Image (cartoon, rainbow, N blue to C red; front, side, top):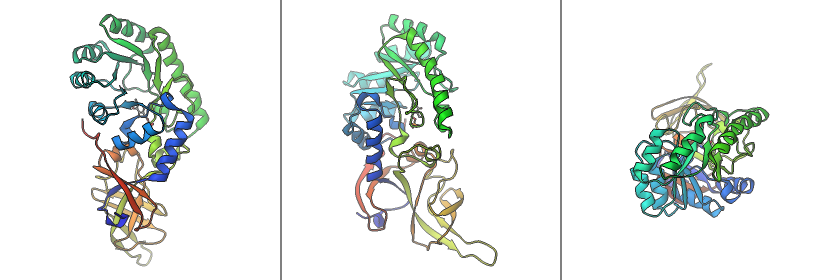
Length: 340
Ligand SMILES: Cc1ncc(COP(=O)(O)O)c(C=O)c1O
């Protein structure tokens, strides 16, 4: 199959850029020092590429991701880095032979782990992002309660999500250390071998964690590129120009492609079209003005601003080599970890 044969909009993965990203991150955080987060790509075939680069433990955000990873034979060491109040489906995954560790931050999530049949937990610590996580000073007591309830406490996790996109790298580094100092203080009370945290934006600054939970690095987006992260843009959305309007007098011309709000996560702003100014997205359309006006039928590769919610809107991603209409589609991967 060639690019020209694909129905648009379609997720494209540039094979060379993906492999370069995986190799670069594996060099920075080899083997168990990286626990790739699958929430960014939701694709077991891509996770398998990450195992080929030496990482066998994975981070998940949903029960469905844990189930799908285990079903794909990638369940050697799965961390659900998120709180759940019903862990019975996770218990079933454990009973089937996978290793599942669950984040807990309260007596309620502790009880859910016990009742659901999960045996291993991490204490999730609030290190600055107002989301999940127990206050550092209470982490030790929760770990004691968990152990008394028969759970194995492997250590702590904390996610400095509010720092990931800071553009000033020195400030990002300084604030990351502040956050990880809180995590280390909690770890001193909790014990265990695992200190888990970090993401694509802070991976180079987070030297306290025993493992980094980065996910976006594999495919990337314009928000992370704007923050100065060195990984390559591997994911684009192939789109077809369906309408064009020529300039008239002082009024500029524009073009409309067939990928809009239903093809892109928009919380980080509009996607980008290289060599063009994106005006706006509507449900099925992207309106843009290009330096070289396209013709109806031309195809453009649109770059998402936020990868995670973009990928979650698509059923498959096509692995491609090259850019032109004759570029070969090397493989098609199901985005098989979608849903809940
Ligand atoms: C708990 C947790 N860890 C790690 C990450 C990975 O972040 P990134 O995709 O920016 O590498 C996320 C992303 O939202 C997260 O929620």
